[in-house]
Image (cartoon, rainbow over all chains, first blue to last red; front, side, top):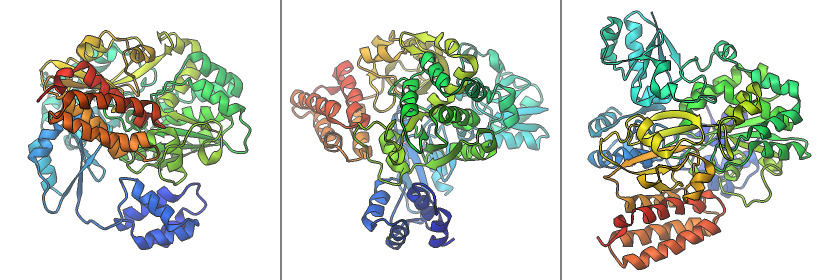
Length: 135
Length: 484
């Protein structure tokens, strides 16, 4: 799908910018300077406005990063269940990005992580290491 | 043989798909249901009403052979964790197939919408006011009053916006409601639309909940003909906690930075795209169909004081029996943590319970007699928020938790107001000095002063409530802030 296709799909929607940005990032992996310019033109916004939105939200990125991402919850409920020690035992490594997020709604069975849309609970250092290695 | 296994995200995270596949391979017929909310037992397997859990794929043959006594919990509906609850909002939890319109209709679905249409808009709003239902997102504002404000506003277009940006750690009731009983939320929104004269509804779901997003999108398509002319559209957040604040959520829906708006104007008068808008939490809207179907009096008969009805309480963190416990307001914190939650999973003593998410206070066991009620928690300098409890054992360092509260605020601040944007970072720096043993009492006095500024000077609850965890940690656990 091209950027023009994505913009066409959202034509006529109320408040289309976030849905467009989600689709662009899903298709291309990031939202680059060229895309921001084209989106701004299509929605009659300034580049600064679109850039402001892209940079506000944790989910969006402006540069490509092909590494798979393991999103590890580091919020209070997972802290109470020992995520800090688990995270310390599984350091960052080449090829996989371990990213901090706050809450997956799995707060009674943490530590919890998400890869893509697949969710994992009751993690200990061994299970997290295996999850990282499997990417 | 018919086997029932939940397809709730929490069950999946605990390996439910592997268990389901093993049953299918062994020749059993597997149906995927919502979750009962007994999370320590997930994946929970149900055969003819009898439960087994937690089940791993290699337990499947022993269950089929009838020799899995160690995993058997007997009749699920009779389990004390379930039998002690008063499930109104979560009446279908564990009992129905989430996307089955047949299951929904057979268990009282659409009766609330039918009743509302028979009553008319005004009487529907009066019923909601009489029920005493207060906003379950955390603020506790009477839902019916908000609806009446929107109904009385003159506009060519009005909106119903469901806040499904459940970002508080320790909460998962919105997720379970959307994944387990999506039509009930849509029915609640349709009733709201009918009552206030809105034809368009948006559900704003956080991106961390892909399973809820998928279920809600499928449900909105499947029942579109039943709620017309009302129309529900699903929108996805982008990882900003502050978008759970209603005005920031509206900006995000409009395609802007999720920055908080100053109030007034109230969203009820100038909300989404400047139009009168009902913004309600998932739990508020999912409770509406029950109230309309059973009557305001039946709902108001539950609860205590000004907290009427039931609250789906989420028991989480370091707890033996975590899960969803819906009960009338008035139960004590200690009963929830010790009696129902079974104390800590680690077996160590409970030291603190954070109630109401990252912006809620830390309560010591000496406050365990506090009743679960909006006003009772306000009276002990806390809040019930979205009804999440996070239990900590005695290994917790409360000074670190206070620092984390500031760190979280700094990471998630929208940047609009100074007390939150700068205060949180100064808070981290000052607490770091305390943690390093540097001029402890002077720096703690600075923190108190800073918290005062944040509490009264911030535009929204993020900066305004971050002082709750910080000050409660300092007040109840001063020994953790001493010379190190």
